[in-house]
Image (tube, rainbow, N blue to C red; front, side, top):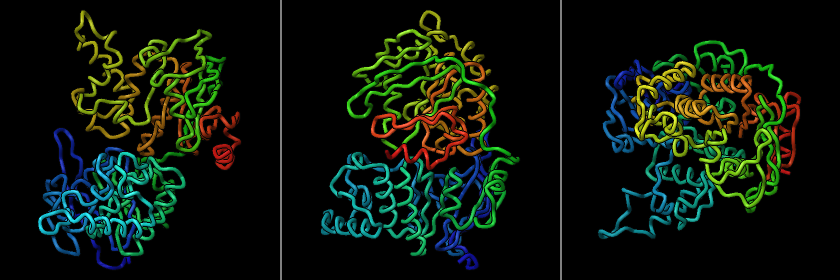
Length: 496
């Protein structure tokens, strides 16, 4: 397979944006029936390269070849016609349309000028049968699970004979079982000579599912190896440009007295009589399977959802939290799981996003004191090493790691004593993860308290002082010494 001429070649791809040279002459090759991992830190150029392959952006220079023939991709239609399909991390589905309608949207099957719905349904049924999936063809996509929506995206690609499938962070929001099913589908597609470019920050998955690894750093291809011939440490070193002797930084801080006490928190069946405490300078991890009630519990604590029962005390003081404003005023900050829709206003500048929860302090007589906001934000830019060309940069144009740092900056500026981190490193590369971990350690060393929700069990074991495991809205176990615990021990509690 690897000895055959490449199905796809991208040679010397160059792309610049105002103030940023995203790609500096990148080469990439993909063979028929190959699963290629495309790795790199946030901002390394992976997404830009794939947008060029998908026809969403045009390269400033370089050549793209399919089966050895130069093939310019000026539009997404050019890319699709050449057999390329890109499944972005944010799915490109119309929520109100059914699976069938989404699969054939814009490329409907017609007969005598009318849409041939019977033919489309039959084709869709066969596509899902080919994927081993049971999808209700009449259900609007907004009512499908994330894994089911992903299958609709894959079916869209197969419906029009895609030979190259790009998957951008395909496992980010999936359960372990759903990831296993996704890998079965990828192996089946590979056996059908469909080639896959797999973008992921989860290195365990790279070793399990890919044949070869291409690493980008600072807009350059810095490594291309068979997966079987590269170690995890070598992979990380290529990505970050330096050796990381540890994926989780050491911390010697000993948690202090109790700061937060939560008792009898309840909301329907999602959260059932949950009680816990967090100490000063402690990182408390809350883990469990997707849907276990972790985020729902934190939303009650933050006042984002109404609680039916329960008490919340911070530093011994009973809090009356009926809204996020009440929680913020009490010194609680929430770094939400979905930073793109809940943590940031993507169309606004990073400075505006930073100022939003701090308007009362940064305003005078109804007007924002812009110089004060800029001066304060610039201090956090330096402290957190946020990579931005200017404070006017749109938040939506930042890499995932830098977006997370902007969210963190706005909460640090509030001087929150308790910070909730919901999946703090989802979609973030290994180098940026390490920086986030260092920041968390600095916060608890300064006496802050952190509740970390995470589905990444190595992260939970590597960062937490104490672990609470949830299942079906209840806490099913506590692990007081994570250093001596195992992932298997956590999973037993998670499925209890």
